Length: 340
Ligand SMILES: [Fe+2]
Ligand SMILES: [Fe+2]
Image (cartoon, rainbow, N blue to C red; front, side, top):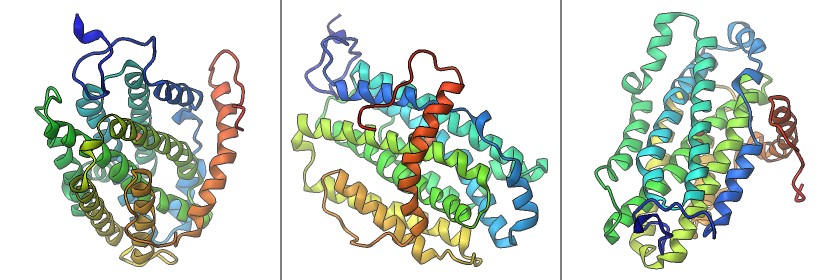
């Protein structure tokens, strides 16, 4: 069974089962780090959120929340689908597939979180069904889903990555889901949550989002590590045409997300403008491009001060999560990494 042996390159077709010697220890370390960050939906306390929605929020703010939750309800399911149909199939290293298995679980957890959120926020069954059908009924959400599906379809039917063109298509799929879906659509969505938190609203949503934010940041780190591994092994794939395809893809993702922003805050939510959200997306896009080793394009500052705080929050959150991971029954020693 020659296919079980370690291939020369990460994208070479097959089912590699060789964990020792380990070719890509960085992926295994990411898997271990993810296990240490276990959380559960049951830990999130939504008790004050319902009161906020009923009594402390304007009609425009309630509309924002409803649309946001409608997007969340389907976004992670699309990512999970791509994980199985594209990434798990083609990234041929067992340690990388261990990470992807863990990520798949985390995406299911996110779906569970947003399902619980939606059930809690939208008690009326008819309204709830409409929210779950958002992908068909709400144009700004449908457009984002179509964008994802186009890049998912681009790799469908590819059993193996034998040709350069197939490898290139896979790299674009990987970059799309990491940089545009997790890195822009989700980061854009998190911005609304932290805007509301900065107003003292929806603490349950913000608490769960802290965990999701942390997970999504890790998913991106993994995907970008895969990209830089492929670049090391096959630098010829990363030519000027790829950079320009990635730039066009990111520009389109920003347009999709801006349309979503017009839908969410276009009716006038005090303190949050479509312009600021677009600039925040451009700021994030530059970070994604820099991580990919591609030139920055937008040259803008982060216009949302409450997202700066998020970095600090993440460090505090890191320690909290160790405690909660311990409480939910992770056995063995829970020790802090030397870096912290
Ligand atoms: Fe997710
Ligand atoms: Fe993710």
